[in-house]
Structures are given as structure tokens and as C-alpha cells.
Image (cartoon, rainbow, N blue to C red; front, side, top):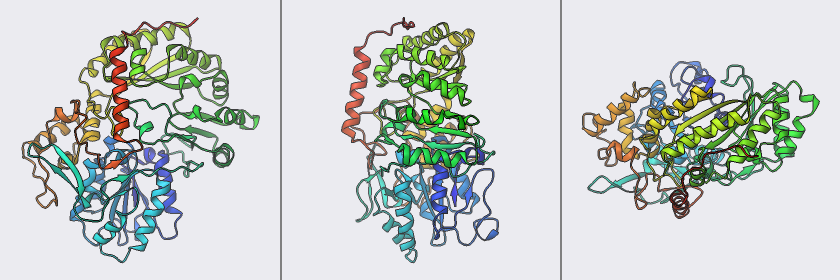
Length: 544
């Protein structure tokens, strides 16, 4: 059974979930069912409940706040929540996706297996090994899986803490499993595209095509860039065009996906191909694009193909902050992108930024508001909106040592006071939920009892804080039969808001990302040096 921790409309829109499901469904030795929070395929054997032949239960996880839903899904299938309590008749519970590849430790006690990296490589090897070891006892099957590259079996590892509760290591509990596990990277010239097109999806009847994977820009906070390196693009003739043709045979809506789609070396050729008259009835949309790559051709073709707006990430209106985060973008390029969007026939420009970035000052937030106001004057008639989130540290990025800055909450409010009276739409993400997201992204296994205690109230920020306090106070018992020692969680402030020492053992230190720790430290030091050496932000003005 393959589960998604949200509703069908959301889950079926996830390209990653679709690809995993299709990979499983194509195998003659696998009978796969899908499960969502609001519905699911008929269970094996046509009965309600687990059914007699459920050997695998998989979860695709792309957002931290969805992780705790795993426990509800397991309970609904009658599967023991804690992995050490599962027996020979219970399915092997596995998970994958960017969240679990970055830091699976908060959910590790509930998972038998974690697949680290790209499914194109991992899934076939994982399924072949399972089939080969089907007659083995459960523990032996897990030991065999742990020998596969990119396959992490948490039950074969244990955290070790010092007397003060500081994590010292996560290490194998027996001979055999590797000391570290490396993320697996697919390097083929074909990427993914939709295998399911339905009007019930969150983006109805859309065919999604992955144009590029990762991003070459390396913004210091960005999990989508650092965790998925290297930057890879699909072949135009062998990958993109056949994938687009396949989808347009059944729908007239096309979505081009990627963290940086317009940096595909043949993106202009793809646009030219989509500009043919035979696609006049096709509606084309693209995900966020780099401002410097917006051209009149891009605006014109997207407008002709039914798009009304373009999305660019600016991170901050402050040149200084863009240097800190390694955003290779100057204000002139932002104004140019806005003009090209309007001249091409688009009516709106969506911008994305952040508050609470490392070394950010009040003046940097004012610079963001100044930039939006200057854009509105420079390109009248173009509808502007700013989506802004609180900085949340992510594993395997240079800012993984930084904490969430409490002043971000007031800075979001400051942007609202500046922009809304000017007729600029502001779409802020919740500061409170960003804090919970950081709790999940930065914790180790000591968060697992908190996740269990928060069940039934994990949709409430207060519920999370109450559960955390209860576990720290010993009011909620940690399972006494856990096969490893689990001290009380550290103070909330230390996990969420503190800047960690570079010598600290991180919860994901045993998991190898694309770049070594030394490189991430150097990138962090470069970022902080840029923040201290640059002068105050200058007020943006439209270029002449």
C-alpha cells in the first residue's frame, strides 16, 4: 500500500507520488493500492482493513507538517505505530521523499526503512531485494536491505547521548550496517511526468512534466537546491517533447515543473515548439522562474497559452540580503522581468520572499517593501503579489546551523502594514506553523514521543507545544520497550530558535547529502561574511 498524508486531490497532484505509484504498479510481482486521508483504493482481497496480503506500507513525504499524519494512517491499517513492535505478520513500513531524505530522525522510530534520494534508482533495487528475501525472517530481511546503497534501516541504528543530553552519534547497533548512508542520485536524461490526469486533482486535468531537477543557483537556505544536486535537465528530443505529446493526447493543460525551469539550456527551443498553432487550445503554466531568464518571448508565449501571471523568487528586496543568501539577482533584473511580463501580455507578477533570514535587519524588510512599491510605479497595470515565508533551517544546507528568528513574526506584520494600503497583495505564511516546521526539520529521535503525544491535536500549534511540554516533564511515558535510550527532549528554544555550534553533532550527520559538511560550512561562512561586510540596503529605483 502506498500512502500520501493528505487528501486525494492534493496527493494525486504530487508528481513524486504519481511516479512512485506507477513504478510499483508496472511490476508484475507487486499489487499496489493507494491510500489518502479521505479515500483509498479497495484493499487487497476486497475487504475493509489491512487485508491478508499487505507486505509493504509506503509513505511519500514532501512537507514536514504532513509527517505526523503517518501515525493516523498506520493506525487505520491496524499496523503497530512503533517499528520495534511489529512482528512477522506486519508489513514493512517504508518512506521516502525530500523530507525523509533530509532528516528522517523524528519519524525514524515509526519507520522500518527510509529510501534516501531519487526513486528511479532506489525503488527497483529495494523491491528486488525484498523479493529475493521474502522467505527470510523479518529481521534478516531488514539486515539485507541495509546493505543497499541509499537504504537506511533506523532499527539497526541507535542514537547516543552524553550526560547532558547532547547527541554524540547515531551508529549501528551491530556489525554489518554501514556507518553512513549516502543519498542516491538519478543521472539519466529523462525525468518524470504525470501518470495520472484527473479533474479531481488540486490542479484539475493537468499534465505535469519535470523539466529540470535541482537548481544551479545554490541559495544558502534552499533544500530543493542543495539536497538534490547536481542540476539535471531532461533531454529535449528524447525526454521533454515525447512527454508533452503523451499528455496533450488526453488533456489541454500542461504544467512545466522544476526549481529553475528556464535555466534548461534548451528552454527557448521548448517554448518555440509550444508556440506552434497546433497548441492554440493548450494552456501552459510554469513553476517559479529565475528573474534574469524572463524574456519578451517567455511572456508572449505564456500569455498566448493561457497564463495570466509569472512567478519569480526574489528572497528579499535588499541587495545585501540577496548577497547573503547567494541569490544572484540584482534589482535591475527584477524590474526587467516585470516589464517583459507585462509587455508579453501577462497581467500579474507573483514574487516570493522571506523574513527572518540570518543577519537580516529591519532595514532589509523595509527594502523589500520599497522594491514592491517601486515596481508598482515602474510597471503600472501589472498586478503584483508577494508571498512571504519565515526562514526555516533545513538539513544539508549551509543555514542548517541557524535558528528561526522570533523577530520574523513582527517583520511579516510590518510588510503587511506597508504593502496592503498600496494595493499590493501580501500572502504571508504562518509564523507559528513555520516554528512547528522547524521543530520537525531540526529534531532527532527524541521528538518521536512528542509526535505520538500530539496525535489528535497536531493540527493545532498549541497542541504541539502542550505535547512537547508533557514529554519534557515526564507526564507522557516514552515506550519502555524501546531498544535504545531516549532522554528527554531538549528545551524548545534550543531546537527551534538557537544558532547551533558548528561542532555540534547534527541529527542527520550519519546521512550523506550531495556536499560534504566542510563545503556547507564554507558556504555558511561566506554568507555570514557577506552579511557583515555589505553596507546598509539602498532604496531600489527602477533602471533607466
